[in-house]
Length: 222
Image (tube, rainbow, N blue to C red; front, side, top):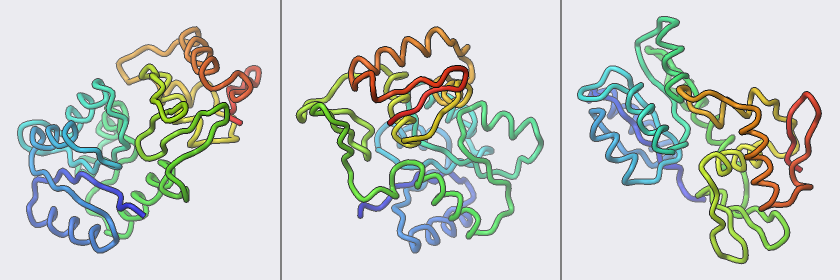
């Protein structure tokens, strides 16, 4: 199985080396960065499976880095690793688009468990890189792309996020609130009308029967 590739942004050289060595021993491919701008360049140059971001780093702090990346459509999951532990820092972390928040100091095993948990949600537990959706459609789990007879199907940013979310939670009823949290960035205003439009657009492509509506509850991918 292909190694998961992690970006590690940590300006403390000693800690960066410690984390890199540990995670590589655990089977991950780790790319290190020591300041925000170089990390930002790497995010747009390389395909990562997970971002590990310190916050207090030179040139561009971790919160701003992830906020910028999210605004450009980067939906790679991210864990903030920081000594900033006030509640407003935690809020800023999630508002910036973070998926988890780990306060320093921490045990290496705890970081590993959090990484494993997020990567499991992002398809690494699946035995195949392709999911067949019927009607000549298949979904590339590694690259989050939809194909029809080996030709890429163009999806809008929101429709692409929505399909990925449904596949990650196949069979589960996802509430409107959960879907809105994943589809809209923190500086965008969620809209029920817009969500219905995205659902409608996706149904036209993958089939109406694939997305089941549960009145006053949410939607289910089946």
